[in-house]
Image (tube, rainbow, N blue to C red; front, side, top):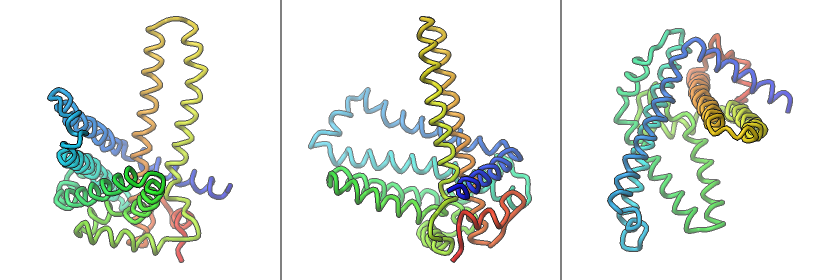
Length: 280
């Protein structure tokens, strides 16, 4: 257990070192977050104002509701995948000794925009199917959906770097991602979720710290102070989320580079990567 924690901390520090070298990498998660908000608003607001929300959930509007939901999934997946592709592309430049810019990341993602769109369609289809299984299958459906969803996420963990580095189609990218997973699969996976776990703890600490702070603020009966405090905690959580997304993209790029090319670098040395993904 302590060895896992130590290795996770080393992976986090290595990812942070890359982010410190290229602070502009955090721009991509910011763009992704803003784009998702815009997409959500562009679908939700017109339906609300046009009175379509109720009709979509009625029996007669189920087909239309499915189509609207699928379109929303596709667009949302596309903007997230495009931003992730830009982040991974820029991170790969840094890991190979270059000095990437935001423009470099956007250029790399744009070069593979067709494959990203097709993969967004595939991801949206899988997401809709899993959602239907979960909703209609009740308890058993939720369990099946969770298991299949976890297997899909693991198999597609390295799809984005495969798309932007190897330039293959989305179906082939899924196959290669799954193959890389097999090659780097050990008795247990530690590094996959190390950054997420550590940031999950950070989120928990912030939330727990907010409880006594809000209690003291409420005691002051100052509405302005309550609003400022609430905004402050929200901004901290948002910042943690953005850094988490950035570090996760950097880590995926590093793992892909080791799995596909057998290469390490000054940020992620070979021992560190092997500790996260034990080769058979």
